[in-house]
Structure formats: structure tokens, C-alpha cells
Length: 49
Image 1 (cartoon, helix red, strand yellow):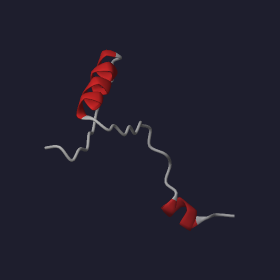
Image 2 (image 1 turned 45 degrees about the horizontal axis):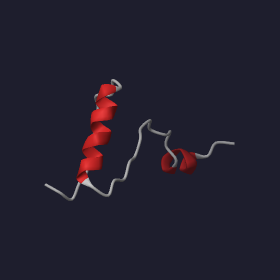
Image 3 (image 1 turned 135 degrees about the vertical axis):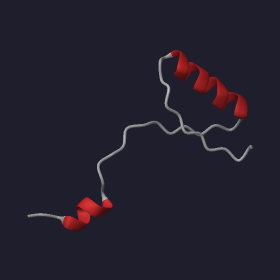
Image 4 (image 1 turned 135 degrees about the horizontal axis):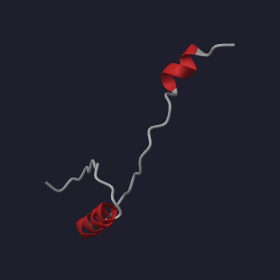
């Protein structure tokens, strides 16, 4: 039986990783390591401008 509301409210998962860091230095280190591993597409949100 089709579940139209399920399709609207439960879209397919988006591949990615979410990291939460307590310090900016740790965030930058993680990005550097990911770049060294060949990852290139990042979106970073931070309260620090």
C-alpha cells in the first residue's frame, strides 16, 4: 500500500558527515585531514565569523 506522507516526510538519506567541535582549532584540523584524504566538498557552520 502506498504511503504518500512517508515519502514527503522521510526523504531518502543524504550522504554526509556531521561533526561537532568544541574548538576552532579542532575543526580546522579535521578539515585538513579530510582534504588530505581527498575530500573536497565542505559546508561549515560556526558562531565564529
